[in-house]
Length: 299
Image (cartoon, one colour):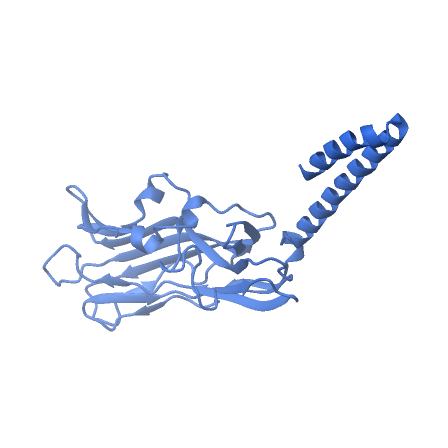
């Protein structure tokens, strides 16, 4: 716009002082070229200052599940507990210099994409932890954030924050781990009886985990890697046996290893904000006969 104003002024002055058409045309062409060239230079400089995917280096990316079986604990007369092996992910990152006054966070975002979690009590019925929106197909994923650090899985080893401007590359490691360590009542959860009736625990859950660089000012997201993993548990229980010898693992002993995808998978909107899986889940009692009952509602 400033270039156009200058051109108008020069044209009117030149028409009086330099009435020759050739000179006027030459002067106008020179000014137009200069303005255009300056615009190009500014655009190039602007692009160079932006953080792009190809400028972020990720190496030593690791995604594993410990090669050990789920451990069953029968220490309590009230509940059985089990502890699964850990899913672990880590990566070394080199972030290029940040030339602007902006903040970037690099770390792990995780969402639950499928959940089956059934505790069977003989022929009486079963309790189940459910994610209603996921179960009914209303959403494709639900955030697995810690409930505080949305959208991040956590805010200790899981993320690193870089505040610009920075004059040199930033080098760091981001890591996370996840496992199951729940309690399941021996007795029917809606009964006043303490008689152990638990006969089976079956759990099958799937997750997508993203390594992401997020500009907290513009909310621009750069996806660096996508990981898929699954945890399955199958425990048979004989409630008639003494405490300490009732439960045993059946089926698979070790978990399938995570998959690092060769093509990036977009982050769904529900993976970025509230509610997280812990707040969205509901504990249901589903008797063999009669209507289902909500034991613990979502938060």
